[in-house]
Length: 198
Image 1: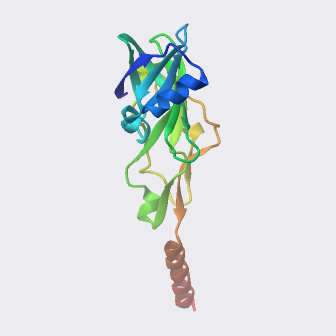
Image 2: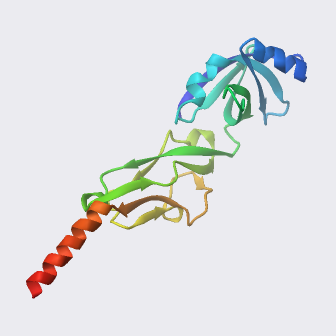
Image 3: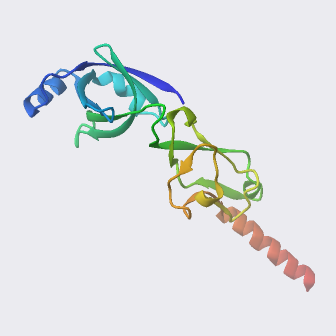
């Protein structure tokens, strides 16, 4: 999985007054937890531009005053009006610790149902999985070449090495729907067949 580097400064004070002052100076208050002691720190707001506004999921290399750890972004709080990032929570990870994460889904191949006039629809853009950080792929790749018209791929049909899927088994990940144009074409074929029979 791709990594992303973030450098921050440890916060000595964590009250509302301190937090307000940080935001006023273009900094985002953050916390990394899960490694024993919670570490409160601040990062320049612009540092999150390529971490948050992207479909990619990253393992984040957090550097707080020279103290380094690896983490996953767990929660982001945005301002209700300006949409600016107000707070970010990180979960520290370790090689021997199982963690949960949502990984983007990527559909590969031209579905048979699309060749027949259907439309391929991605219903779950991300899949929740549990595993070790070293086993996380950048994307969950799903082959849809054999997906027929009107058929779906459910979570229960998927299996990936070293990953446990956490979404409900009956959740639809991708489906090929019959489009109106395809329905019209089928209807026209049916009418032709009837005329020939007469």
